Image 1: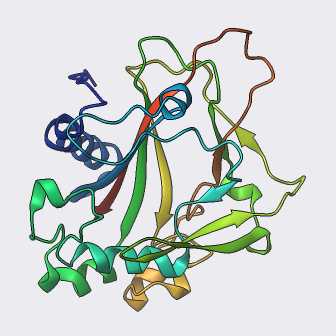
Image 2: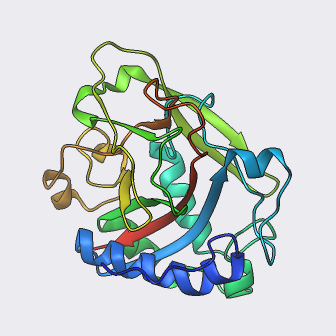
Length: 248
């Protein structure tokens, strides 16, 4: 894929130029019929520390999640709730409000049929600096090494909604991977919920026949981490993750 790089610190450019590119990429790579990009975060520790803001509004610059803990962005309950929220008019805290106004990201009349089909939340994660990622890379857990008993529900209260994450207890069984020195032209597609995931399919609103058509991984635990091999003076990581929902 040849990227049309933009100024990723410009919120308007991200919403109007990068979101459509991400949506097309996810559809192509996972085979979905449709995809909606609905939120994003920019992470750069030095810019966060200096209080630098995004251009043209949007969320504040965040720092890489090193001390936040190993987590997944959704739970069985919050994944469904987030889709329902996307079928409502954007609230004042919604990233999509400048792009959509009062129009819902998803058609409310199609909501039930969308939930009954297969859907996947995917984060599109990338380096936005001209130099490869050398500090605080993203670690990814092999879903096959994670047990449901490892998971802890963590509630997040926003000004206009309540979300849930899964945190993870430490386990020596977990197997971890990362992509070293990711460049600006590379992306990681991080699956953060699959309605056909084997371990949670019974709690999904899909039709009965589809529950036999499962896949091994529901989501990917992940976290930024302090790589001990990082050289002194290495530049800070600058990254963007765009949150998407894809339907099949």
